[in-house]
Length: 100
Image (cartoon, rainbow, N blue to C red; front, side, top):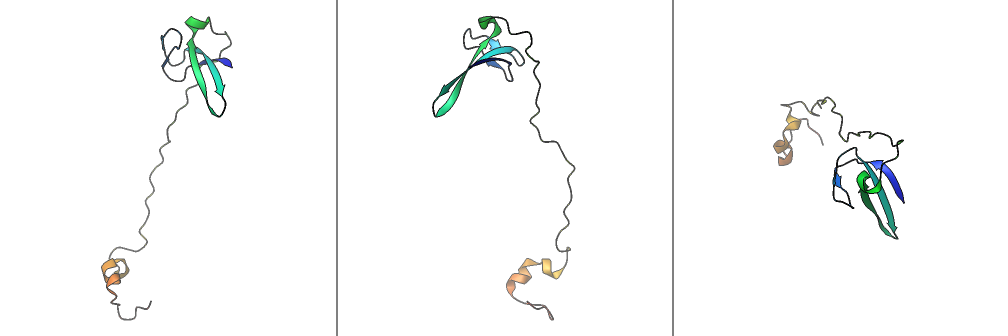
C-alpha cells in the first residue's frame, strides 16, 4: 500500500538518501509481512514525482503533560502528637489510658 503524507519526524529518503525535513511530502510504502510488524519505506517528492496538490498540511501534535498546580496533602496525624512517634509505638509501652 502506498500513500502520500507529510513527514512527522526528520528522516532520509530510501531512494536517493536526501534528508527529509518535518512537514515535507513523502510517499510511504507499507509492506505487510505476515505475523511480523509491517515495514515502512519512505520516498521523497524528488524521487517519486510531485505530491498531490490536495495533500493536507502537517498538524503538529504536542506530546506533553499539561502542568497543574500542586496540591498540599495534610499529614494524617498532627506533628508532635504521641501517635506520630513511631519509636514509642514500636517499643510496646503504652501511655496511661491508651487501649489497643
